Length: 608
Image (cartoon, rainbow, N blue to C red; front, side, top):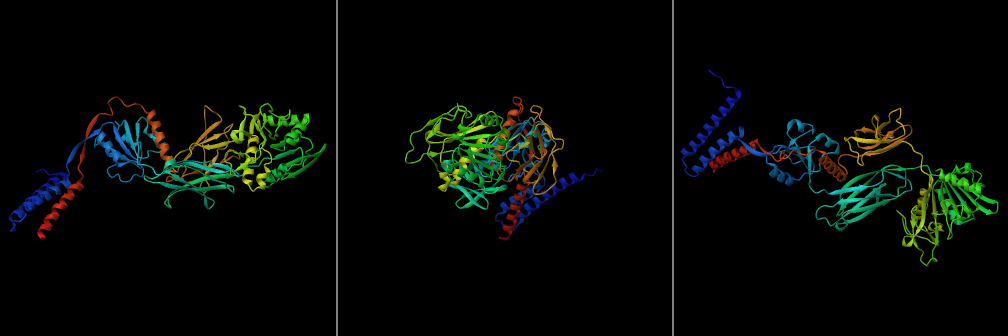
């Protein structure tokens, strides 16, 4: 006597139960006294018995499927695109989901892309729907052909650009673009800094969502500003804007005036209030000079010697002083500039520069007509307000000149030129102190900061760090680049400023550029991080949470997918077009619902 195994016993036992149930319900419906709705009750009984059977053992069907293709769902995928792709490839084409994907009940979750090769060895092409895969995960696909399909329309900041570091006194500027919601007529972008809204701009549909905001930081240190997108008075999105405001060592400035003038006196007072080390030498009469020192010790300024010039980074002199320099002073000044130890700012008049002036042949001064009643307007990048001043002359354009300040009709009012390792700046703008007297001190500061920065000698080369991406993310590998002459004997370390252990960085020297080294770092938390080393070198960078700045992240993913598609090997002719069939089980929930519907009808009809 053979004994059935548990599975066959369950199969045949449930089959017999469903057949008996169907026959019993049919017989009861036939023998009931009331003849009304007899046929419907008999049909409902048969349907209930059959639905109960198919709930336990649902039937199977054959579906077409692409043999070498699959679909991967990521965040922001469009269901319409998925349905259209399934109609094209076949309803049986496997569908996976990666990451935090919602509303995809039929997709199988996948924790690692490496399992794709294990589950489908014949896979050759992968269709990615949505925002795409993280850039660090794409190399795991290896030789697969990747095809990125556009997801749902993105709403928010598509791009944004601002400096990671900014010297105190410079203006902070952020610009970018916004993708407005469908049907939106206008929106506002607001920059929040130092506890309040500092600048805002109204966006219209015609502007394509472009914006540019500006703010003048008041204190140094690490700060996190906020960029707010607002519509109809309601905030739509807020993104962090980390910025490091530095306080670099201010260069020492030597002022040389041929005669007492309010221009140099006002400049000395401004630099002193800004904490610059300043020395002022004013010629009172032949062989008699007057000196003044602020924020530095007193020295002898009678003669310009190499030892004296080594104390300063920039010399600001008028044309009269340059013409009166002796041969030894001229040689000392020129040698200091050419060797990159000093920068020169020359204040020219409406006449050619003195013969002993550096780069005189490139700085040709052209007189201009008499100044009209309305003073001409001057312009330079990030000028904080209207700047008007008399302009008795202009500089002739030359290929070696870099214009710094322009006047009417693009006339050059100030320009710089490299001379050896240093720089020379020539300005023909007189009486800039009037801006300060008129209350336009920000314009005055911006003008002189631009001239001094152009003349300051370049800083000596030190170890420099930079991040391999503009948007470091938590739990994503970050490549750190170090530029230094030799590898440090002690590995540098990186740590989160909020707290946590310091991680040593294993440097790998670049074989093509020996001065470059790279290290991999996996951030474990969002916020500010600091690299210490080599030596006294220090570098601070910000790690973003995964939920912010999705617009730039989506663009990076799409660009990386295009590169991956170009680097992958081509699919063999006809391999991806081959259609196969797969066996799929009908959803058991449909038959259970049909059973409840039939049983509910039998119960309700009996009560009525």
